[in-house]
Structure formats: structure tokens, C-alpha cells
Image (tube, rainbow, N blue to C red; front, side, top):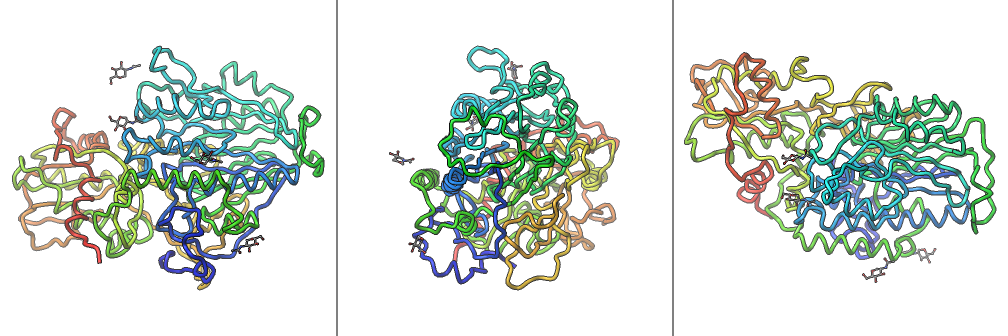
Length: 632
Ligand SMILES: *[C@@H]1O[C@H](CO)[C@@H](O)[C@H](O)[C@H]1NC(C)=O
Ligand SMILES: *[C@@H]1O[C@H](CO)[C@@H](O)[C@H](O)[C@H]1NC(C)=O
Ligand SMILES: *[C@@H]1O[C@H](CO)[C@@H](O)[C@H](O)[C@H]1NC(C)=O
Ligand SMILES: *[C@@H]1O[C@H](CO)[C@@H](O)[C@H](O)[C@H]1NC(C)=O
């Protein structure tokens, strides 16, 4: 079931030239849509865009680009002004890393930082990805924060100023403003979860400590507030948001609170109390979140100079109503929600930004082909192991033919990689420079330990794939998270494999032939959140890690898939080597060493060395595709 083949009649009647999206993007599909639930105060929310500002060129559901989003916001602003209501834009971080548009330039982000900043965003904050490298947080500090001066908030994040060496807030701690048309007084915060993997030039203050700070305690005692707006690169059902919520509620039992979160890449909506709700809007420019609140007080009204029609007067309500919608990021949805069409929808600014994006993609040569994939390979849409599993393909085809360091001769070897190192699916058709970055954007190389007894090495995978408590503190689990009750912690490991559709039923409902497969979200408000009505997609869990055995003596008993199931220990063959080279992606070195300790050995960092210097998982995949997948 492949979405992009199911072009509806509507899409076929359009010529490709009329689209504002990227020229090579798949046209969107027609589908039944739910309208946006407009209210007194409305929001558009993006999160975890990870450089996907060109949209998804091969997936019609998500094929609009950042320029289209700019047109969309401009059109909705026109409507808000006509009706005398308000619209605010929010972004909750992880804007970088994960797509060639960001990663392929030198320096990284050369184009995306400017492209992103074309959107008028009212409140934004940093994610964890902005902080892994000291030069990317410095780019936030020197480019993005000034571009969004007054709107970028860093409630618990400091940076050492690269010029003065002084520790200072990355941006202001909070923001207070009054909305343009309704005069709603908003007090906004911008937090990051209790992240510890940042480079040493930034300082993330734990949320529980930040909310004890004097500035925060003073801010939440402000009585002239109609709405608390808490944005954060934090998953919704977390200790961090719960403690911020409780701190605000201790001072304000009655003031509405709107939360926007991110990080886990899912669509989710959580009720904190009858006047406090939280929205998370997916990942990778797949989703534009829409949120509205009606029934807020408007204490700033008398001071607001507004030329909007005096029109809509909302009475502050004892229980304001909150409503959400997850918009599929494509032009069909955008036209529908603005009641416009391909000639009337795009704005000059939006078109300009779409062309900034195409010219950046050209300069970066992102469409350059290494080869053509003969079929789709999926991370989570098919079981592992299986014919169409990207992990089976890696383990059985790519790694065995590419993982070889000449200095080690023909030594039998095992390579272990975490599945989180692969971020996205491969679609049938051109495998381009862009694809390499979406599939595996990480720059991690390989390391190895030589001559590890096979009797030890063969038990590693099982340890890594089990949640052995001593080995995986709960907060570092690489396993999936699914929406958890309020108060539960989230995995803080940067490469844990966030489940893109954790809320999708594991078995699809009876398929409706007229619906295209896509998001079918269930959240605290029910099952009517998605704007596009889709047939559900089945998602499969994959193990934390996979293993390839290479140059082993031929055995009689093993088959490829057997070798790599989760119980390799059951395989005993006379031809087993006594010792092997244990190779792994360097990102998981600490886990490998821990697991080896757990198995009773005492390997340490000094026993490890670089393997295949200069190669990465990404380069190995690109080379293999070039050698094995011709086009035609
Ligand atoms: C940071 O440094 C790395 C390594 O030199 C480089 O590849 C990257 O482009 C730099 N990133 C930024 C944002 O300057
Ligand atoms: C950060 O680490 C680098 C080396 O990795 C060191 O040179 C530098 O002094 C450290 N900076 C701070 C602020 O601790
Ligand atoms: C778009 O809408 C305008 C105004 O309603 C109309 O004149 C025009 O014919 C429409 N264009 C298309 C291609 O439907
Ligand atoms: C569009 O781009 C042109 C050329 O770069 C520029 O002169 C113009 O100001 C831009 N217009 C808008 C609305 O962004």
C-alpha cells in the first residue's frame, strides 16, 4: 500500500507547473478533510522539522514546503484579521539535522537558517539537536536568536558567549505580550527537557531548578495575564511539563494554560485540567498543528490599538474551550483550509521562499543520483526481519559487502549498529544525495575491538536488545516511547527511536478503499484530530540493535535471517570462530562497553580503535547503492 501511487482524480487534473511546492515534489492527493476549528485565539505549530523545509518530495501527503507554510500563515492571518480574532505561530525546536538541505552545506545550515527565519514566528525555543555541537548552538546564538529577537525564549538554557566567554541566557527567559486583535495578555515560556548530551558551551538547567528561580516565581505571580503559554522541546506527558504546570497552578488555579511540546515526533494532545491542554505536532514537516481557544479574558483590550473590525466579542468563560487539528502538510489541505486555489493561495513572500529553497537544493546538488531503489524499504511499516525491511537489507546486503578494513585481513567480524541510526524510509526510485541524509544523517564513524572471544560477542546483541535494568537506566532506553501517563519520564537518549505514529493501532482497522493510508491519531480528545481522514498504517517495532556477521567460516546450520534473530546464542556450530573483530557505530560505544562488562569482560575505551577511517554508515550505504542499484 504505497501512498504516492494513489493519485486522486483531483490531482491528475492539475499541471505540475501551478504548484508552489518544490518543482519535483509529488502532487498532493484529494482526500476527505475535517475543517479547522477556529476560535478566539488560534495557533499554528511546527516542531522537529529537522531540515525538512523543502517538504517530502516523494510523499504527496507531506509535499508542501516552508514557502507554502509561509503563504498558509499569511492567508490565515488575513482571515483572523477579517474576523477580529488572533493567530500566533509557535516552533518548538530541533529545526536542524536530518535532511540534506541542512546537513549537506558547508557550514551546515548555510541555507536553512535563513529559509527558516523567513517565517514570522511569535514564540520559539531550542531543541536538543541545536546543542550537540558547539558550532550549531553558536549559530543559534548569532543568527536565529537575533532574527527572532523578542520571540526566541530560553527559559532554562545558557550559552558561553564565544566572544567574551561569559555564561549568559541563550535568549530572554520569557516574553509577555498582548495579542493584536483580541487584546489577550499572554505570558510565554520556552523550555528544553532535562537534556545532558549538549556540548560544553551550553548549559541546560534542569526544569525543576529553573522553576524555582526568582525570575520564574515572579513571572507567574503576574496578575495581569489572560493565558500562560508554555512551549518546550519536551514531550507532553513528561515530568518536566507536569512540574511547570503545577508551579503555575500553585499561583494561578484558574488561568488557562496552553502547552506546545515536541521531541518524540508524534502527534499528541493531552489534557492537564479543564483549562490546560498540550499539543505536539509530529516531525519532519509532516504536520502543521492547529490549536484554538475560545472564552479567554481580554484584559489588554482597552490598550490594544486595533483597526480590526470591532466584530467578534467573546465573553470570558468559566470554562474556555480548547480544540486541536493536525494538518497534513500538503497543498490540498492548505487550499481547503483557506478556501483558496492554486492561483489565489500563494503569496509573493511564500513563492519567494519556495524559490530560495529550490535554489539551495540546486547548489547542494541534492537531486544527484547514486542509483535507483528497485522497491520501497521501510523502517517501521514492515516486520523485521523481512524482504522490505531497511534493516534486513542493511544487515544482509550492504554491511557484509562494505564493512572491511584491509588492515584486518579476512578476520571474521561482527558489526552492530543501533536501528536509531537509520532515520527514514527509502522509496522506490532515485536514491539521491538527499536520500543519504534523510536515511542516515549522522556523521558517526565505525570503531572496533579486535579479537573478542566469539563466545562473548555472540551474546551481545541479546543484551543490547533487552531492557536489562542495570544496563539501560530507564531514562536511557533506546526503545520506543508511547504516550505515557502524566508524570512519566521520557527517554533522554538522543538516538532513542521515537515512534512516529505511536498512537496508531498495531493492527489496521478494516481498510477503506477510498482512503489513502496515513496518520490516524488517537489522543485525549478522541480520534477526530487529523485534518485528513486516512486509512490506518500498521507500524512494527524493531529491536534496538541489529548485527551482521561477516567472513565467518561457512556453517551448515545457519541461514542469514537465523543469524540475526534475537537469539543468536541458540546457534552452535562447530565452525564458529574463536575470536572476532567486534565493530560498531561509534555512537553506541558506551553501550557496547557496558554490555561487554555485563558479560563479565573488562574491555575499556583504550581497547577500541577506529575501523575504516573516514567511512560512516551513510557513506557505506551511498557506495553500496552506487555499485548495486542502477537506474532503469
Ligand atoms: C561545525 O563544525 C563541523 C566540523 O568542522 C562542520 O562540518 C559544520 O559545518 C559546522 N557547523 C556549523 C553550523 O558551523
Ligand atoms: C569544552 O571542552 C573543550 C575540549 O573538549 C575544552 O577545550 C574547553 O575548555 C571546554 N570548555 C568549557 C567551557 O568547559
Ligand atoms: C481560483 O479561484 C478564483 C477566484 O475564486 C477563480 O476565479 C479561478 O478560476 C480559480 N482557479 C482555478 C484554477 O480553479
Ligand atoms: C521576493 O524576492 C525578491 C527578489 O529576491 C525581493 O526583491 C522581494 O522583496 C521579495 N519579496 C517578498 C515579499 O519577500
